[in-house]
Image 1 (tube, one colour):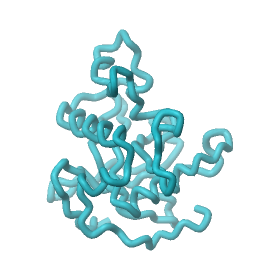
Image 2 (tube, one colour; image 1 turned 60 degrees about the vertical axis):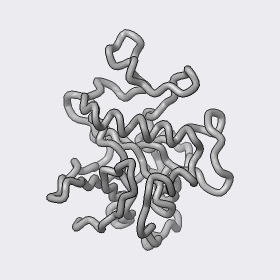
Image 3 (tube, helix red, strand yellow; image 1 turned 180 degrees about the vertical axis):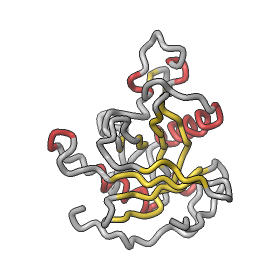
Image 4 (cartoon, helix red, strand yellow; image 1 turned 30 degrees about the horizontal axis):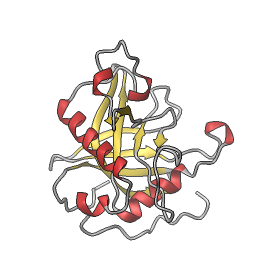
Length: 197
């Protein structure tokens, strides 16, 4: 991954309020959307950005200032571009991830733990993906890991996309090209325990 270290120290007590201090306000509104959709617990036939106006789910898409705001894109790791959101100059963060229904990456289904949390091994972006364009998707995930910034998680099933909610990027495993995501992140302060995986 081009020199990205896997031994970046994790935030000891990540919290929603702390994470909000690192990101544009649109991210916070998108996080609230992910939390609502997690509670609604309905499958999306398509990812929100591919949901047409004639779909019953169209009304559940995120709106900010009366305009639809994307929370997903075709690329598995998504961040809203600088033309849409004013990102901090120092770091840009991933907003969401989704696995592929086509199996282009070896993502592993979420593992549900006894404490009610889940762990999802999510493949890092291939350097040859997206027609060779380098948008530093992996670095945006590393930035989330460094700063305790959560990402929204969609999991593709044969019936549609399930919104798992928000998760922390707990670690990067370069030997497997996996990010380990641990969720659910909840609105109140959350102490992150290391996962057994």
